[in-house]
Image (cartoon, rainbow, N blue to C red):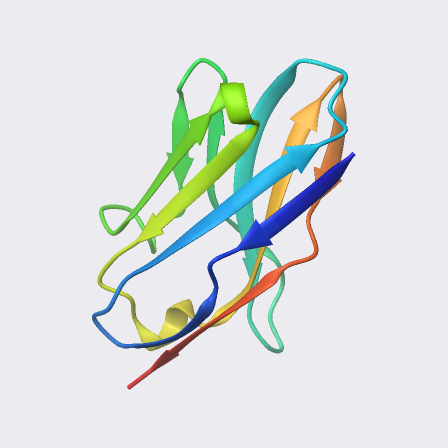
Length: 114
C-alpha cells in the first residue's frame, strides 16, 4: 500500500490550499481516510478524518475552516484548507485505515506566512 500526498506549499495567512492523498495497492475495504499534522517541536495531531460512511471529525482548531472529502472510486482523500493561519504551518500526513491497520503517506509541508 502506498499513499501519495500532494498540494502542500507556501501561502500567505488568509489564503487557501488543497491537499490530495491517493492510495494505491489497495486490496481491502478502506474504512477511514484522514490527515494528521506535525509542527516543529510539537506532537503529531489529528486534523480531520472521514469514514466511509461520511462521518467527519475535525480538530477544534480547524473546525469551520477545513473540509475533508473523499472519492472512494479513486481511493483519494482531499483536505480543503481555507482561512489559513500561521499556526497551521506543519508537515501534513495523510493516512488510511483498513483491515484494522493504519497506513501513512510521506508528508507534505504546508507553510503559512504572516
